[in-house]
Image: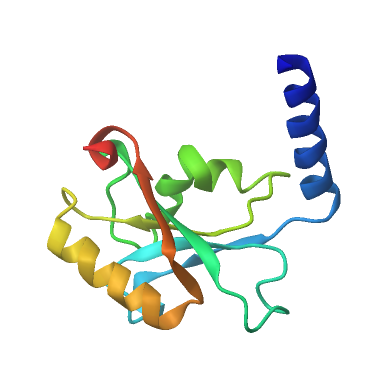
Length: 137
């Protein structure tokens, strides 16, 4: 049973990879109305499926990736989803990886999330937050 499940999962990931990848881009704090600069990953089909809503994953970096959201944003892509999504990895969700200049604050994250809900096609029943080190706290 475990072997069959592993084969099915591997096959499913292969189909996702063969079907193409989404695109990750940097959105600098100075070029956006968002409270943070961030990496934006949009899944394959985001631009063409105009009525579809997508799951949202927000990745919060650790202390070593603090920065200004502009020329220091590349620090965020050293770990986690933004690092994985630079390669041949596909995820059927919108992934946003903001950069904070200090410790994460729930009020600031709430403001960011409200802004995201207005500016992206997000399925509000499928919002996930993850992080490492300081971002995991």
